[in-house]
Image 1 (cartoon, one colour):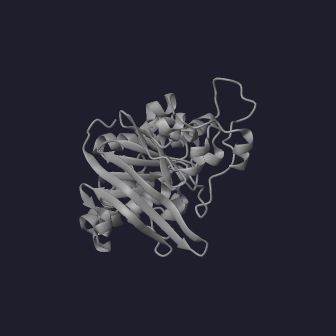
Image 2: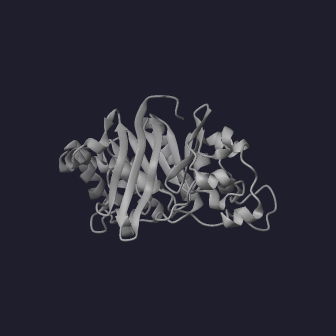
Image 3: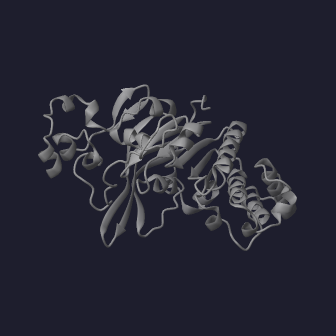
Length: 342
């Protein structure tokens, strides 16, 4: 796992907004994180919290309009990607920073063979001739564990199973030996056995090539299997940053605790799953104060009136919650009536 501490990506105060008729949606609202060489960082949270928008922002693939990266820095090996031209970004995408998208069927071109689509990456980024590029494509299919790669290379996406298509996506993403692999829910549509194989494959390729991985998922099982560190996102902000081990052993933020409690447990009988009450706020109407306060059983007056900063807890752990600040203890407890009115 991530032993090298060489920073390859630093995201600082990233803000990605969408300007629509309903107003401004601050989908990503000032987030910071660092990725080191050989490390897997998990981005976790419910749908709509800003995970995928973060990854698309890193690659500058936000559709404009209505989207716009409104501020911040994305430093890749020291260079700010937000200052690069579109032509410079095209040389980086798929070459130094690759992405595996959620649904391979929509990301692969239905009319070209999978071999041609992987070969195209080699021709575009490494300027290989047709024959060499094809040979490399077949080799990539072999590396990602596709049986009879020569035969499969000639097939079109619809002829392959979901698990095979996902492997093709990984082969395309890995073709140029990227520094960073962004995996957006890479196993969502797959059954558990294939999911385990895909995660195992990514781990093996990571050890072989030393790349950093950003694993975007709402599945905490995937996090425990693959991640070194985890950033928990809620309503466009990071609310907790910790190691994967500590996330499961001592979650700090009430939202993280809620996510973990909503997991089915095999070690005891459960009549029903615990769910976090309420729903994620609309991006056009964020609550005042802490964004999780309306759903939080611990909320006091300050939680509804002021947004907490990320508090450093030492050991690279951070949490965005008033409970971990001196102000918390000065707050009177809320009555049930006050909570309902809040």
